[in-house]
Length: 250
Image 1 (tube, rainbow, N blue to C red):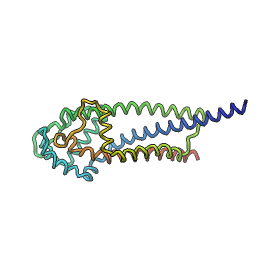
Image 2: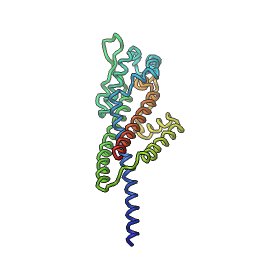
Image 3: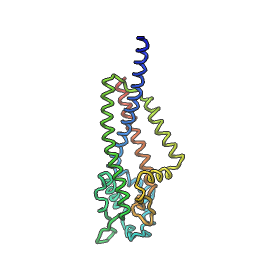
Image 4: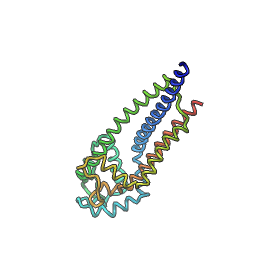
């Protein structure tokens, strides 16, 4: 009888150890993604670097003069303005969309500034801002959950699993998602997410000739390196924290 109880207790403890380690690892990974989003936002997602690598200036010079919304004068703006506008967009979408409709550009030697985005573009960017606001609340809940899990692990004397187990399951899961994305095609996945995340009656696909937003971001080309850098930096931070924690446990 006692041996049966002891066996059940051991199985229960093993199950709890696995469960709490998976949960804590997932929560930590989420928080790393949230942290690196804020860090990359503060660096303007390195727009100026990708601006040169992706030949965005050439894209602007090619398509801005063809703009069908009467914004052909955007072709007379300079790279520094483009980086500044992108920074304004990043700031706005990270702050519930505040100021999106007020973003302007001023052509070289012009006396007046012009509204950058059309109502449809503002609506789409506001949808992005609303999504980020939701993610902020989710991240706050995850942060609380992470501390609760840590407290429970300490109280139950559940040790943090070795880093190799976190890498095997956590990083393995990310690798599978990455390979699946590459198999399906990053652009196809990007479009699928837009279709299923944003409101059906809100435009999210914009041709270069109708949208300065798409033109000066060279969408969706710019989003690929931003997504990769966000992924790698977040996973790197996650692994670093796990390594430091495991090092302290030795």
